[in-house]
Length: 395
Image 1 (cartoon, one colour):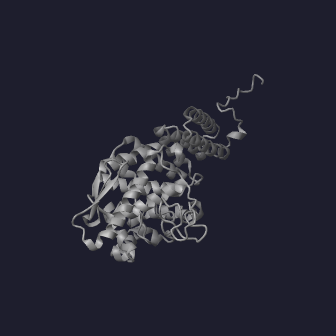
Image 2 (cartoon, helix red, strand yellow):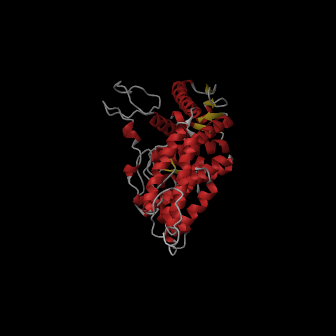
Image 3 (cartoon, rainbow, N blue to C red):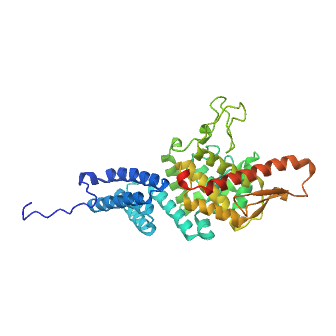
C-alpha cells in the first residue's frame, strides 16, 4: 500500500467486500438464525451467543459497506431481535422502512415488527400488553377464529380475493367486536348462515369505508390486499393433508390419536402437528362450548391460543419457552370456567391436573352428549398443559 492510498477498514466479520453484498448477507443471516435456533433447542446457549455475535459483526460490516440498502439494515434488525436487543431492532426496522421505497424487504418488516410486539408483550408480562397485539378475526367463510385475513384460513383455506371481500373480512375483527361477539358471529356462520346475515349491516359498512377516499381503513385494506396477492397458499403448512390417514385418506382430528378412527391404520403424526391439532381443537371448543365467565384472563388466553396456532401454521414454529410459561400462567390464573349453559365446569387451577364436573342442573337426556364434550374439552386442555410444561428443546 502506498502513502497516497487510504487504509481500508478491516471488516469485523472477516468477509470481503464482495461477500458483504446485501442479498448475500441476508442469505447468510437467514441460515445463521436457523442455526442459532437449533442451538437454543439443544440448550447450547454459549454456542448460540457466539453465532449471534458473529452475525451482528456481519450485519454491521454490511451496513457500513451499503448504508443506503434497506436489506442491509433489515438483516441487522433480525439479528438484534434474536439477540434480545429489542429497542435496537425497533430502530433498525424503522430505518429499513424509510429506505425500502422499492419494496425490497416486502412484508418482512411488518412481520418482524409483529414478532417484536409479541416478545415485548411477553417481557412486559401484563394482560394489557398481550391484549394490544393479539388481534383476531372471524373467518368470513367458515366462522372460525383466525389471526390473519391476508393468508388462507387455517380451517377452510378460504381467503378474500377481492377488495370488497377483504373489506368485509376486515370488519369482522377484534377492532370492531369483542372476542365474545366475534365467537358468537362465528357460531352463526358455522351454523350455516352467511356473514352478511349474521351481521346485517356488514356489506353496507364495509362498502361505506371503502368509498371514502380519505379513509385510513381503506388504505389499510388496500395494503393488506396487496400483501395477500403476493403470498402463495403453498407457503403455509397443509396440516389437514399431513393429518390424513395414508390408507383410507380420512382426516384425524384428535391430537392424541395413534390409530385412524375409520380404518385402524397406525398414524405417523409428528409432535408439532399434534400441537397444531390441539390448538385448533381448543379454539373450536372455546367458540362452541365456553360458558363464562367472560374475564380479561379468558379473553387473552383464547386469543393467545389462536396466535400460537397461527404461528405454527405459518412458520412451523412451536411456542418459545417464554410463551409456554405464559400459557401455564394464564391457565392457572383463569382457574375455573363453565361450559355452555353452565352444564359443567372445568378447573385449571393446577394445569398438570385439570379436572371437570357436571352440573346437577344438567337434563338427563343431555348427559351423554355433554359428558363427551366436557371430557374432550378437558383432555385437549390437558394435552396443551402437558406440552407447555416441556422445554422447547424437546419439541
